Picture 1 (cartoon, rainbow, N blue to C red):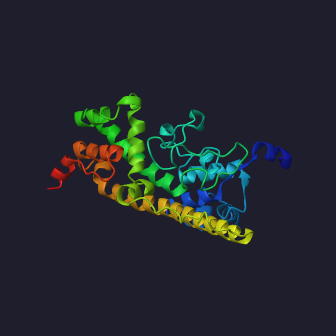
Picture 2 (cartoon, helix red, strand yellow):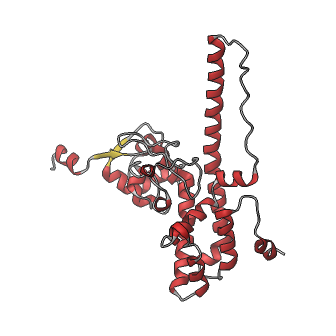
Picture 3 (cartoon, rainbow, N blue to C red):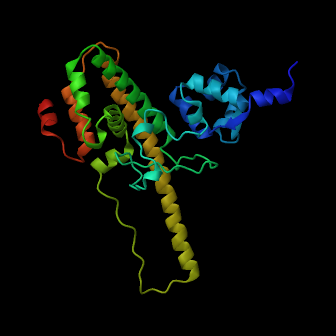
Length: 287
């Protein structure tokens, strides 16, 4: 009979991030109980993980989860910030570029320290990542299939994306633009006016310590509420938008109908450069 200390060395404890595991289970359309049955672990154990009570689990358990959910084990453990299709087009903090935290060509992900914990605010929301990854993967597979079969429109469409700093990185840009199409922040920038400025503090008024504290507490609560709402919107819009786009493009994914690469590229170029301006050819196509 193997000794327990040898089993522990061969199957060490590794990090696990409950919010990511929960999002992945729900994205697969599973319940916690069903997922537990698939990986042959007790429902109580998996429930403790998705609730965030268990921060570490055996490597073998995390590997079974990753295989069942078709995701990298390192992503489930928070050791990698992003799913593979999103990672290549995101610059790293070492580049010293600090744009707004939105889904954009210049996006920087705020990475936690090596010994820190991944939370919703340290990277893109998990369900947004999963939705964008799934849609981008299906588009990439169908697009590559068309190119491999000698579809000239497919090849020409891809080459149109390789301009400027994106030369030689056409697929990365394609995945970035597809991810933007399911981004709550992008659609809000497109459709909504900027939010109103916060109420100004009267410089002539003498505030007491209690009043300053109340103002600070009020601002903190508003920020927390805004952040929570933005995260929820990011997840909700991403899932719904990705599901709708995938349903619309399903015949192409399944090789039953051809894609209009001209219209598809118009859409991607609109996502690349337009905020509220609909290209003329898109308008003409809709007539």
